[in-house]
Length: 107
Image 1 (tube, rainbow, N blue to C red):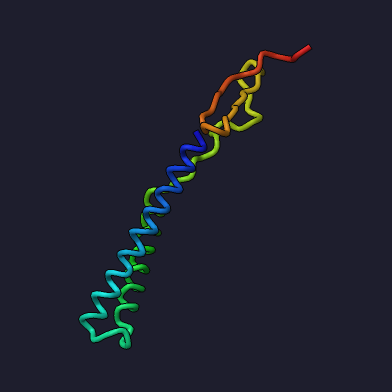
Image 2: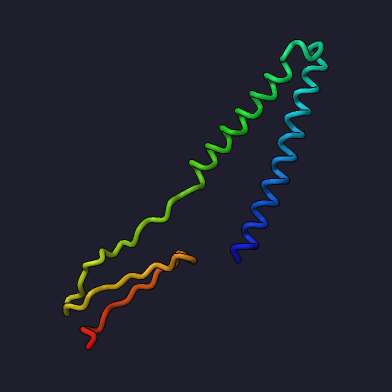
C-alpha cells in the first residue's frame, strides 16, 4: 500500500510541477508581450505575484482542512470501579484505537 501511495504522490508532484511551470511561463510571456519586451521585468513580476498568491491559497487551505488527530481521551492510569485498568492501544499504520481492560495479573 505504501508503494502505491508513494507512486500517486510522485505522479501528482510531477504533474503539478509541469502545470505550475507552464502557467508561470504563460503569465510571464503574455505580460511581457503587452508591456514591451523582456527588458521591462513586468512579466516576471506578474508571475512572481501569481506564485505568491498560490502559496497563500495553499497556506489557507492547510489551516482550514488539516487537523491533527487528538490523543486518546482515556488516560493510561485510569481504572474501572472494580480496580481493573483501562488499556488503549493505537495502531501506527491505521491510526485506529482499541480500548479494552486487563483481566488481572499474568502468572
